[in-house]
Every structure is written in structure tokens, then in C-alpha cells.
Length: 126
Image (cartoon, rainbow, N blue to C red; front, top):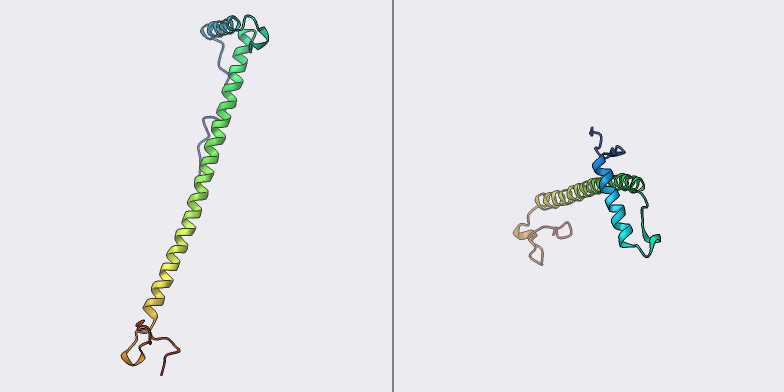
């Protein structure tokens, strides 16, 4: 079976547009204002640092999504294979039961079993 190359397989670095730089600068300033008394709680000190961290997070998340999709695919294949084997086993048991019932000689009145089962057994051949 052939598969197309996954769209998540590339490491994507988003270009630094002026709009993105301005948004990162605003976010860094917002965080600095929020933690003015505790500057050690600020995650990013510059917009460049924030954009780098966002790129790393984006790539990490895409790799996790790719691994998750692959694992779910493998799990589905395992379940499909297992259910096919189980279904084949059930079908085989049903065929054997049908053959057993069809191939047994029916009881004639002289060969009827004491329990009235309707089937002649090899032990009741008087």
C-alpha cells in the first residue's frame, strides 16, 4: 500500500513579518506589565525570543499530532486484523457446527436415543 508524504513531516519556520513582530512585541509587553513586581515570572524578554519559542512549540505540536495520528492508525489496523481473525474463527466454528449437524445421521424410530435427542449416537446402535 502506498502512502502520500505526510503534511506534518516538515519543520516549518514562519517568516518574521512586521505584523508578527509587532504582535510578539505587544505580547511580551503585556506579560511584562502583568508581572511587573515579579520579573522572574516573565517567560520571554524579547519578541525574538517569543517568536523562536512559538516556532519550537508549533513544530513540537505538529510532531505530536503526527505521532498521535500514526498511533491511532496502527491501533485501528490491529483492531481490524484482530476482529477479522475473530470473525473468521466464529465463522469457522459456525461452519463446523453446521457440518456436524448436517452430517449426523438422523435417528430412526429404532435408533432413537433415550433422551429423545433425535440424533443417533454410535453407542446406541442396538
